[in-house]
Length: 196
Image 1: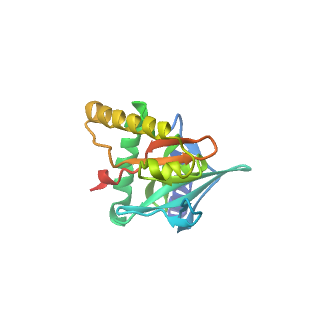
Image 2: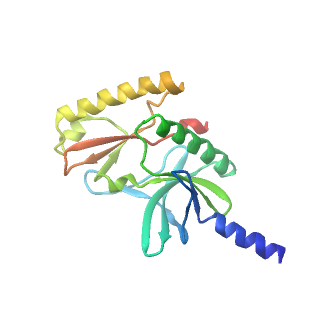
Image 3: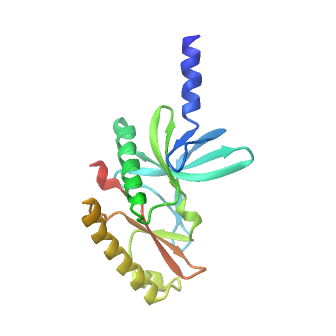
């Protein structure tokens, strides 16, 4: 009976997403088995993986609603929970200071391990890149002034992060390209440097 209670409790914990204004309890949470893919400019897909880990889709169900989030599974699986907790705490600090981070930042347990669950930014624009490259953006119809505006913003936010939080975020940026509205949306997303 005690073992059954522990198992039931673990399942309940795996349906809770912490952070935000209050803890969110889902009916069901499912992680995709394959690494997330995003589109390149030519339409070909590329896997979302890097030096520290890979991104996976996370599907959160509540009633008839389904929300897509993204989680990072770190290559160093023995420190998955420790790194996820650290990154979650850093994201919370950035959010509290008004930095441009994904709108949803939650901490979730899957099979006893912690993961940071974030808004799927691919829903906010057609393409995603780490490079602030005006020639690349120009081929998608993004005006030069928009690239300059984003470059100035990133430079200013990098300085503010150093002054207010003592952090260097220069390598943490990802850019979502909204070709419909001809804008670039910058987000602090890659905190891989915090896990070293």
